Amino acid sequence: MDLTSWVILPFLLGSVGIYGLLKLLQRLRSSAYIQDAVVVITGATSGLGKECAKVFYEAGAQVVLCGRNEEGLKDVIKQLCLIRGGAMKFHKPHMVIFDLSDVEAVASAAREILHLVGKVDILINNAGVSYRGAIVDTKLSVDRTIMDTNYFGPVALTKALLPSMIQKKGGHIVVISSVQGKISIPFRSAYSASKHATQAFFDCLRAEMVPHDIAVTVISPGYIQTNLSLNAVTEDGSRYGGRHVFINKPASLGRL
Image (spheres, rainbow, N blue to C red):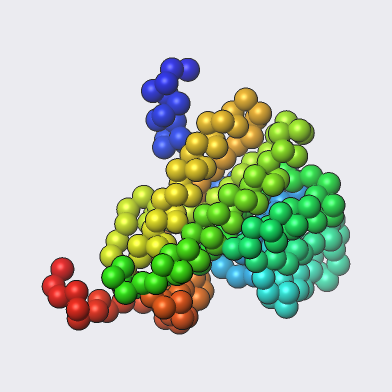
């Protein structure tokens, strides 16, 4: 394989949109190899993370649900129990509570995951935080917070679990990015920057993991209805709390 192929292949094979995500989940649901696989999902309390938990659990995987909200994770586990008529027929779900923006907590969580289940077959880096604000008004601390959660957190967790995947010579790392990881729009600077960085890192990781039979998939959804915008942070770090695609631009910016 020549250098050109190495550069182009990640863009052709590694990134899919929301349609690709749905097709991927449908394929996983019907795939025998998912049975008994250990699947770690971050941001599992709601949205895509919660739906992924349901799909993998239905397919017979051993799921490890990760997030900051203990009660939220417990609620998801209760819902998983109902899928199987109130009995955990195959694998009891596990939960690991940690803050993705805390690198030390991430390292500790990785050790806990491996202690609980011994290995990781599929890692789904889903957790993230969104942002709404004008660059000129945004505190640098907010930019750092977004990068810590959306970029450094998934990178730290992946690096912590990667040696175990390499040792067993296989695995699949899935990253939920965004269409804004490819195209930036106004008032999303911190979020887009974090997703651009994520895209670049995992595109590189994909090429490096070929010799180890570890697949890397970056999924780039467009706008879907989750709590991501409700929980987005604004210029000063406060909660946005809305579902609008665009926010009103500050009058100080004048006309675009």
